[in-house]
Amino acid sequence: MAKAKKIVNGQEDIVRQTIAGYVRYQQDRIHQIPGTQVLVRNQLDQGKVGIVMGYGAGHEPDAIGYLGSNYMDAQAIGGLFAAPGPFPIYEALKAADTGAGSLILISNCAGDVLNAKMALEMAEEDGVLAKGILLGGTNVADPYTGRREDRRMGVALFETKMISGYAGLGHTLDEVIAFGDFVLDNVRAITIGIRPGTSPSTGDVMYDLPDDEITLGAGGHGEAGADNIPMCSSRELAEKVLEMILNDKPFVPGDELSFIVNGTGGTTMMELLIFYNDVWDILEKKGYKIFKPIVGTLSTIQESSGIVLDICRMASDDMKKTWLMPTDCTAFPKL
Image 1 (cartoon, rainbow, N blue to C red):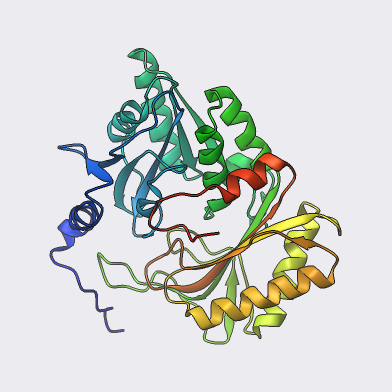
Image 2: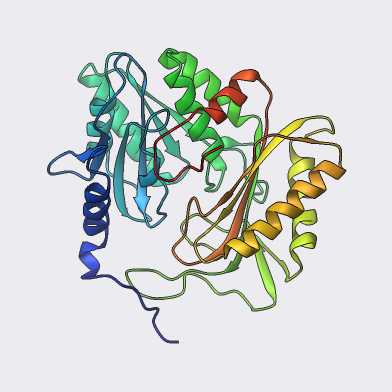
């Protein structure tokens, strides 16, 4: 099989040069801590809980594009699909702290969890006020759904946006964590793979998938899903995955729901809009109210073709308020 074509320079420079390009693009808004792969907002809000994420490269615009007002304050960037080490996370936690402490939003992968834990221990030893929250328990294609520590990767845009916004309202570190847990309990998601992406390092396809099948539960690092189903229409796919999601929480007719239709890199806007329309139509016909859903390519797995569908029950006024809060980050669409 032919290797994928990628417009890059040396393989060892992919992440470094990605960061360099973004910092130049956004130099009026963000800066890089010298000698690290840590990015920080230039104008931090004093006395606000700092929001930090440690994330691997390869998902752009996530999470590099979510540095901004009412969103993330600092980000530690790891290698391709790899968690950053504890030192850069620690540096990001320190940089984001303007007097109220800082909070790291932890992706539920073994490396992310371990390195975040070590960074928090370093912070405690040095008297830096920092805590973490694990983003998990939402992926309904995971056989361990509901057990947050066992959840596979998801996009978690509802969680990160709302938690960041709640911090922006001036709440304490513990209050932000409690609100984050509340948000997590009201989100369910599923990942859908249509065509695998290819590794920027090797050019190899990340997994095998027959042309006439769709994989459900595809991993955030390009892994195949837990279950394959026959290729079907957008409407049929939306019906199937919504049934899985709605039965898992469960959500009930009359609930006010928002949703995100995210393309994983190679999914055209045409496909995303058709699926978005189908999801909206099905939810309305089932008796749900719709609140400000979004669609776009928000978190990717290189050029893989697929969709991540997140459903969020707007269970409080604070959830609605923080979802709608404006941000100047480059990746989040205007609501």
